[in-house]
Length: 359
Length: 100
Image (cartoon, rainbow over all chains, first blue to last red; front, side, top):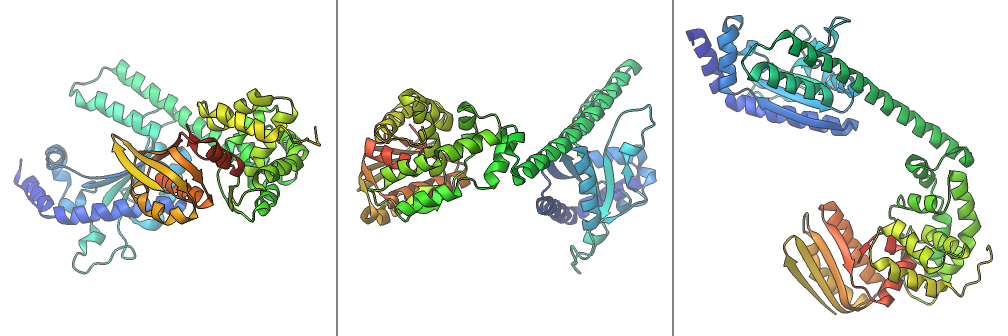
């Protein structure tokens, strides 16, 4: 190694404490900002270049760097996203968080010719603004540049495998293999775009469902997880729960009701309109059943599932489902376990003598 | 009312015996504290010898479930008698707890 490279390496060793502090600030800043913006990602990571890696870089192109500060990837940060759209969102976020060295930043996604495929990633060369950190004892925290890489999970997979195949072996790869690797980059680019499109269409579908639920056009909404969640947001069991709770002046403990989707499907509901009709048909009997059970007790806590549970029980019994129907109902709610039969038996005994007016 | 907590591998087993009513709740809350602090455990609420549970007892079970969920633990209620089964059923908590 030449003297110039040795001096850069010595400076690198001396500045390790500053780089470690910088690394910690960058990691925390990115994680906080992602959480604040509600962006879920696969990974957020930082690393400080190892002495061996730096020595290798200097051996290859040491003369390019006048000093350590010219090497912008001693500290590297990488965010791996689920979707391509999120790369741009996070880039916008980074532009607000950090000073960007636009001259040295590069969007490799835009470097490809129309007929070429390969490495796709957005690289920003950044530094910390004084608004983020201002330590008069360590002004280098604002001057040291670091590299932020943004890429999707698929881009990361391709880049990692390409690196493993292309560099680790140390052998020049024949053109045919390189072409096949690059063809895969094209396929993954298409997959990334498709994932983003699917996400956008699902978001659009959810909005349409919410809109139909808001307008009360429940017969137009097929019963599925999204539709049922939208329905639950309208809190369709609140009135019944309050009536039941008032039997013993009980408090209502909120619990998730999403598992009742399977129950309504099993009860033959195909649309939210079917669910709504079933609820309306059986809610009075559900209240009577709850009153019959709770009336003679001093229980002053019920769950927000009490209304829908009683509706489903009444529906099963009114339809002649009996103990077996109740057991199936509890299997849909709780999964298969030996307790379901005992609960079904007990429920049947408690409810069998009620006359269901809506039957 | 007596509460005994036994550790067994990845499980914490709370064995309740007697009547978990309002009078017993204060002591029981103290007794189950190790369950509230446990991380990534399977918490078994063994009710083989539990004769009765009141609303106060239900609230304790709810607290255990809430804390367990926050700490990556799972709660299973085991061996309830018919009276307690009825309480779980009529309150709708049957669809919140795993009951075996």
